[in-house]
Length: 227
Image (cartoon, rainbow, N blue to C red; front, side, top):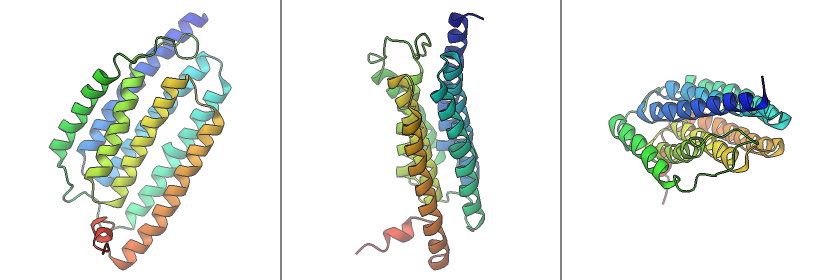
């Protein structure tokens, strides 16, 4: 198989994964089940890792393949498993009364996709990813996921749901960096992964404390502490 054919396959894989990432983001925004949201964001991370690995193989970029494996292991498996374990210790499994209901969240997430596509349409980079892998949908998808993650964080009441929104935002940020730089150095991915793992550790500590004191993971309990 020639390099051109390999690059074309990688571009098609990246386009398909970008569309899948956006679709999963919509599903996360529209679900009230915290457990389902955790595993959906894990699926989204797996799609991101597959896309980056495909480009890495096509362009013979070892750091891309290594970064994708690191993302898959940490954000795709370890972080969701840690969040699922925290959820098992909580009596609440669903978002009872989010600031924005499921239907409104779905509409907002779809609107974000269209707005993102229009906003970055003129800013699409003309140069191909990795020397021949051209995927124009990657950048609009990445911006849409960053905004979708912010939407989830701002409209949820439960702490774990907010962490899910943070993970969606992080996936969008990683895809944005990948779209702009045509490959993210492994040291950058290591730094981002370390920061994310520290966030999960802090969430686990505070989740235990919240369950002990309040018997709930609702962020409303923390807002009530403000003077």
